[in-house]
Image (tube, rainbow over all chains, first blue to last red; front, side):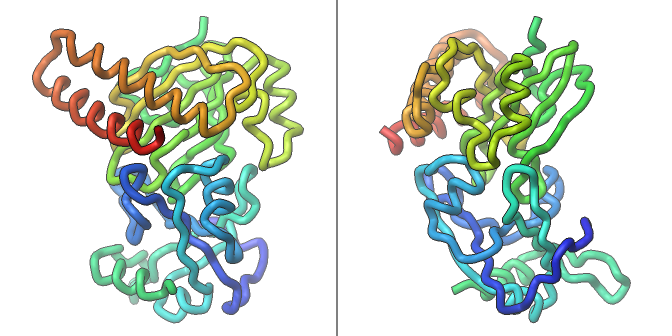
Length: 121
Length: 164
């Protein structure tokens, strides 16, 4: 997990990009580690679906959708939130699963997915 | 000669004997946009669509000239594809790839339309893939391969209809 270059206050809003069928499957609410998905990507701040699409896909993608939460809501239920800017998206934020008592990332199962979904308005 | 993406490879590292991958952006931990080097040439990769699908995504591979690379190095983050993929003024041959679970299952060379905006480009790519997959289905192939091509064709057809 990359180090956090800035301290992200709990009140900050985050936007998750999604895609409606047939272009996508709504919003991702869990990792698919078996095919390389190691984090859930978010956008720093609240943006509309069009702006989210441009940031993520680089154009006004058909079927673009978005939902919004805050860093505090995610942290309150254990998720780890890190600002992780990429060269092409300075607003990229990574969300990682909570750590278990053994210090390992928790399995992102159905229960954790429900907890993640409950963070969004 | 440009190294061509090969079926079965990871969508962001699609050629054999890849020398270097530079990731410029990622989504859910997976590279979506960047550059790779192979056989002494650099190519851009970009996930055109399929950011939140159950499995399928469409990728574009663009061979880069030195001038393209220089332009990319100094472009604003929001403007990285202008002139190269969108509103391209030069004739460009690219490769379009379809991936399932980020592994390439179908690829074809394609002439990038001149001066196309993003919506036109996406619509053109979907029509091109729809037709290419129909042609592929008319050919002999093993049953397992036919199943992959058929389900890919159905998904592309649905997207092409929705974006028309």
